[in-house]
Amino acid sequence: MAHINTLLDDSRFLEFYLATKKSGYGSADQSVILADEGKCYNFADAQWPEWRYKDVYYGHNPFFGNEVIEEDIQISRHTRLWQPITQMSYDGYCSGTKEEAILVFVLLRKVLQQNMSTASP
Image (cartoon, rainbow, N blue to C red; front, side, top):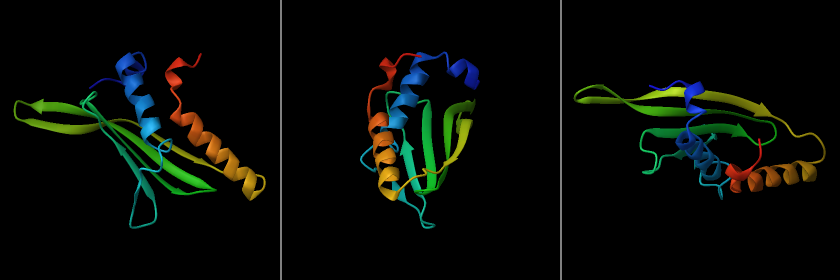
């Protein structure tokens, strides 16, 4: 299992992580509505079979959520399991009028849809 500090230097992992952003909140709402009214975004792709991603969030304004990335680990000759390797909890609130808040969330979704790999550090 790789450590997150090592993963941040791995261009394949960074490509995977950027793809999760585009397919998650940045997508055209590809979420699954949960029984408790939360939304869940899942991402797995054959291009990166060693990782999978899940983002569960609640609310709109304010909002709360948690992202988890898991890695496919072979623990014995015949046994594999998905091991969490990183997680991030987040929350937020957009102040201002309802219309201003809507504009902020539209902008956030638009930014996440763009190819962030060309952004400067």
